[in-house]
Length: 191
Image (cartoon, rainbow, N blue to C red; front, side):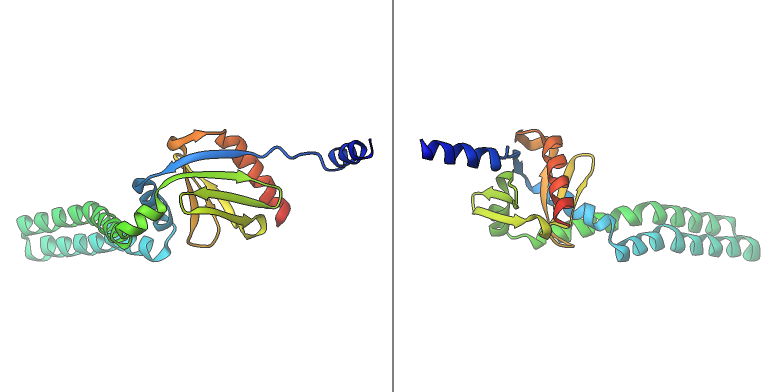
């Protein structure tokens, strides 16, 4: 009888916490999508893109105008103007493509087999639990910086340049919206 009373008292004083959990698969394109997201906020790359999209073509247009006004050479000025427009449109795409290729080469096949695959994230009162083929890892709520949700992905940042990547398209089990609401509450509470 006393053990039942103790159990009842423990249940009412510390009711069981419903744990929110999601299961998803991480693919190579999801890993590259995270790096793209990081590049969009990289100031150095954005400065380079602006320079190649506006500054260099602007200078080329000025040169074309000088050639046209000073030398009265319409054909050369037109070709310089066309080159400026092509440069302004093509250079940023090339820079992004080149950067993505470089990032993709940073991951070896061994890294990819270790990182990619099925994951389970579970919210517990004091920490976020991540389960993968590598095992289980626990992240305290006060160690998580923020959650960023974009159209097709959500990123749980554990440092400035690393995050848990959750692709919305591959969530197999669990309610992702409920998961993020609960995770946000835990992060705010821990802060």
